[in-house]
Each structure stands twice: as structure tokens, then as C-alpha cells.
Image (cartoon, rainbow, N blue to C red):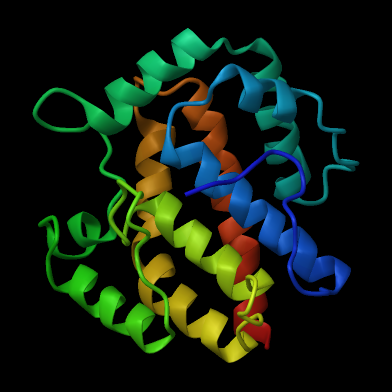
Length: 209
């Protein structure tokens, strides 16, 4: 799973709003795939802030994440990520959809996701250590559906909506709420606040289409 605070290469021409969506999913994927390292923190810290007139939550949440990236160091980010999402025996916050939807890892929700992805010709990369229902993996899947890949065109909006409504929306909001509420969260509280506002925009946009 890859992503960057800056734009990622797009293999197909995209409308500006679709390019932004794909880049934001890439950012979500990188936030949760692994601890924030120095290169990632520097990249996000150097991003220009969004204009914020106080009328919408997304610019403020994004700007708080950028500010937090300027203040964070990679050692602290790694320690926080490990405490929150790895833990000793049990993570404080589990980032897998099956856990949230059925209470068990690698349960029916994961099998159903794998079946839907297989029907779309999408499979887990051999080098990936993340299960398909990990929040980072699903964000990367959404990015792929929006942007396409070499030899793979972007998926129709109906397909994007179906994957989001079936495999992301039922649990990702509760997961991010748990991160925000955790006493262990500092940098990742800002990451989760950003993720919540972005996913809310996606949810509301799909509902209007």
C-alpha cells in the first residue's frame, strides 16, 4: 500500500475533482498503512494549507493534520502507531473491517470483500502485509477505482459507490471515532479527524449521485 502527502501519478486523464479524490485516498492509505516516517511528515508539513472560512469542517481538519505533521517526529509517530494499532496481544483500535462488522478477524466481511474485489480483477499484492479489509488497503482500493492503473481504466462511479457503501462506510466512521476518543491518540487523532471529514464528503456525494 502506497501513498504520499503530495499528488500521486495518475495513469489516466482525470477531471480535477477526481484527481483530488484519488490523492486524498492515497493520503488516507499512507496514514494508516505504517507509522509516519520523516519523509512523509516532511512532505505533509510542506503542503499548502487550505482556505478555511469556518463554513466546512474539511479544510480545518486537513490544516490541523498539516500542522501536526510539522510538530511530530517519526520516533513519536512510530511509538503512537504501535500503541494504537498494533499493541501487545490486542490493539487499542483495530483497523480491520471484519473486526468492526462481525467482531472477528478474517471473518465473512473479509471473504465478501475478497469476492467483490476478485470480480473486479483486483487482488492483494504479494508484497503487501495488509489484509484487504484494513483501512489503508481499502483506501488504496478506492484510489485505484478512481484513478485506474496502467492497463486498467478508472471504475464507473456506480462501482466506486458500491465498494464504498458496502465495505467502507459500515465501519470506517466508527473506527475513526474510536481513534479520536482514545487517550493514546495524539498525531493519529488529527489523522482520524481528517479521515472522518473526508469520508463524510464521500458518503454525502455518493448519496447525491
